[in-house]
Image 1 (cartoon, rainbow, N blue to C red):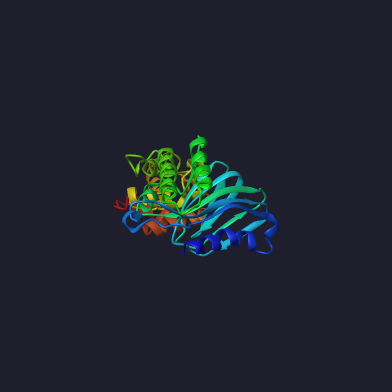
Image 2 (image 1 turned 90 degrees about the horizontal axis):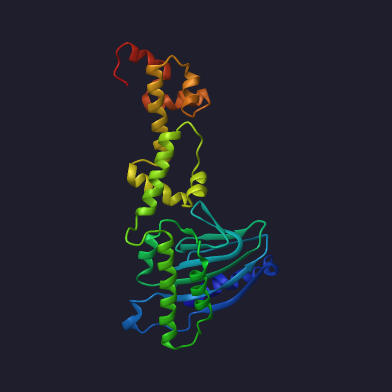
Length: 302
């Protein structure tokens, strides 16, 4: 099984005919030693790893693997797509990814140099659960790069001490990643902060246009993590909350001003009048004019 990941990932990168000239894989490491049973349940184990250089165009689909992956982008830019999401991997970024799902690696225009390790162990899931975003941009690269180099050059011999060193270097990387995410001691704090920032954006600037990509780029958190944490905190997905905010504000404008319906829609960020009317009716069971008229007659819709 351990050589399956080695062959399937790194060898596949350099063996696909139409990519062979643009991919160079170095320092490919296959796991050749297993922890004794009495200690295996306590340590992180590297099953494969190595360095890869890619030249555009490059794209490759991988099946799922029963491992976690740490992928550090040394230079250039790549991307990983999985589950309908796409993660940009710029120089200095560190990806922590659960490979128990099909995924795709690729580049468009820029070359990409990265190091990757596949590992597992009893504590891996806890680190993964605590990391708010799959991709972290590392400001101080030195310590991360140092541990990646140590992993790459740790001798792949049957001595058990090398596996203890693997565990040490992996733990160092994951701990540094936690520190970069500001989640040591408070695992959910960063994601909670991101969700609160988005809510604040919506509350203060509901009339502006937003997208999940905008928040991913602005806050540096994945769209998936943001949606998950926002829904967890506020009970509805981000854009359902924004729509509720816009409809509530529109109701107030209809009741307290003489603004035309299309002006009310524009004021809350919905410039297409037909869309505004249909959306308002969906949420209130009345058109904006019907809502205004019924309220003027003493209705209780407000």
